[in-house]
Length: 438
View 1: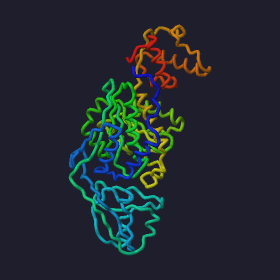
View 2 (view 1 turned 90 degrees about the horizontal axis):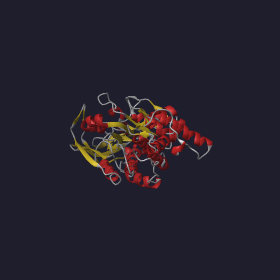
View 3 (view 1 turned 30 degrees about the horizontal axis):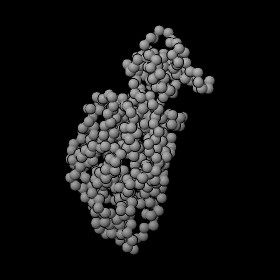
View 4 (view 1 turned 120 degrees about the vertical axis):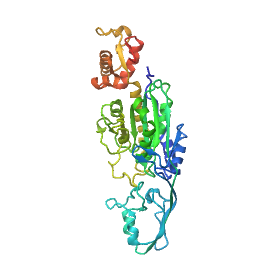
């Protein structure tokens, strides 16, 4: 039986998360490139990562790994000689994966390559062009409206080369080979909630999980570029995951202080879904936002594609696309909360502990109700409400410990707290009233 210790105290602080955030924030990340590798190098200070480099041109089902993008410099010189929209100052100024260009353009011609948000005049949009060759710059609508007529010098020193796409993963073994997947993406530059929060939360979650004295399940963590990365990972390990995966979560947009959001897997009633609802309701209560699966979003749509149909959901706070700061410069350090990010690590760990402790028990003597008092199991300490809650949970446990109901099923049917049921199961095991896991 897994340890019945309560969830350990946080081993990270908001300040520690902030320090890692500040190191990762300025790196120019994309599907490929040195910014991604440097990101994984920093995360490797927390997690023993194994690096996978997938060569350009590798076929991954219906996709092909793209060329590696190198960005040396990119900026515009205005008619008055002022340098502007410099990617060295802010990553979002350059359309990600821009092809090289050098030349002088009139204001009207330059405008064809500029991107802004008229309905959010103070936000710089995040724009990519991974699979179509183009170049461009991003700026606020207010900046764009103030651009004077005249000649603009454009400098984009980039290159697309035959290189590789970087994925990192690690496996934390448990007593059983059945696996739980934690997947997050590292391709977004200078976006705090989506999704620098995800890689950071996953790294600190690994550290918390690794510190536990015992784990029943085996845990697989993966950091990859969105879409093409998860497709390439499934190309390599999809059959293994189909055999071994019990539950999985895409960790995304988990740094802001909003209540938690859970997006169900394609099947909707997998162990991943059931465990997440049990755990996340303890953090957000009735404010927990539940979303049914749909085939848009993040990497869950790859893991839940019909050929794999893996039990993978999404754990987030303000989930992608649901907040106005999404994919803009407003999704910055001020938008997130490092205190909330610490809580998110705790919520993720609580979800995994539900999975780890969700076993099936069987009564050793199922005939009638056992005498609790002579075994010291009848509650006598606490308020009447506490005693009643404990006794009710104990009676439900002993009634449904029939070899068919796991602890989550007992919590779902009884309304009892899962952690209390887990604690009581340990006491009943020691008293010889139940056997398990069945």
